[in-house]
Image 1 (cartoon, helix red, strand yellow):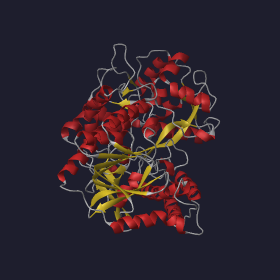
Image 2 (tube, rainbow, N blue to C red):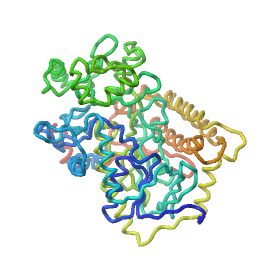
Image 3 (cartoon, rainbow, N blue to C red):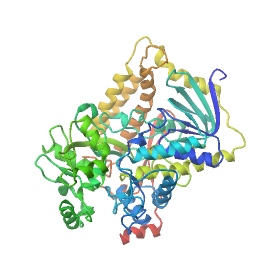
Image 4 (tube, one colour):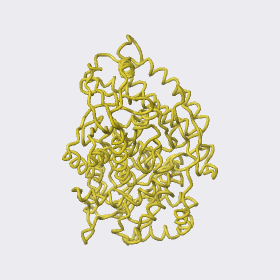
Length: 597
């Protein structure tokens, strides 16, 4: 072990997006020594891509908003499968976290009287998303990054964590390597926070950046932690469709929140045909307000184009299959009829430039082509709502890698407030855990050497599979067998294909050495992507109903028997075990919010 670069901290945070930065800031504020480890460069985290806003019941635009309404919206959006305590804490604490961000220097858009401006978003009853044009995530990362750097937090950039290390049952650190030259580095820590994001690169069409290879999910699973709700994968309804080089790139929900409407190739506002039965009693009001919106009445707040993401994505998918899609296989999103050019450029500057430069489309004059894109994993590592602790001692998780908060479907804007609320709680929990330990946990040299041999194995083969070919096949399998619509036979066939891919991955060959070697990086990432893909497919096979981000064509309706059940994935020896466990009941005072609503 003396041959390896080694660092020792009270707390290490793996992932430098919003959740990781907020966790590191909080742990440091509690007096812990903290290291922030990021796979990419600091400031290039996927949080930057979040455009629409951060959801918090500030009630700056509509005074009727409060945490109870936000909680109710979140639970309804998640089809009542959310961890109710996480949803409650999130709704209660989000306003404080947004105001705190402003105090740290975040520059939000303003109302006429100087308060933080809030916009409409799908599934939210009132205008709730605090925003900075359509660049909210970028402003959040800038603010958190500045705060963290000024606190003196140590940052390790372009460093990939390959495995977690354990002392008995507890996590005692991490085995990583520098992406630049491939040299190994060991991090000893009393507590470890996972904030690695999602799994989208297992799919061909995705809004996710290259880092999203399921690293945290796989690290936690292999360390013995539970994964929950892995079947729930959100396909954002509006990704770019054309040109192919940018297919899947996100088109913010803020376009619809600021007046954009969805149209098929016959010019029809088709979302009126897809209002779920649960919303049917409100249809007349929705249609009336939508018509008022189109007529220029900005007091009209409700439109079926802003139904929850799972509903809109499936509606676009249905229009495409019925032959009413756009020329390149999606639908039209038009804001040019409801907003003037200057307003569009001011409120949606990124979208204007994105379409102008990448697709040659002027959104102030013509419609955008959009379609569903793999966007967000609701499932993840099971955590305690109060402390963000996983089921493994010394391991914590926050942000997209953590499951439970969003249930079966996430509302837009809740991800940014989620990472602030539970990033802070993960930092608090990790620092408190580290303080309780009198000394650092030990690292087993044999364990370290075993990981080193495993990650270098592709270099030792004289022939074998190309990692990029295996990855391309994985994306094809997941799109075809575990995409937006699932079916039992297709899922079973997909699991067979995944077993074949695991065998092929075991034969991967990488040439050259560890310096600047993208093939080796892909081989390491594939280990994680294959694991989370298997978990996702097995969980989707287990849940025999359709709910939120999980749709089964052979079980097309919600089944009340599954309403309060988590599908849990955990390691059992060398096998991946799948079980069902009941979700704790919500207290009566919270249940009454739904009766009153």
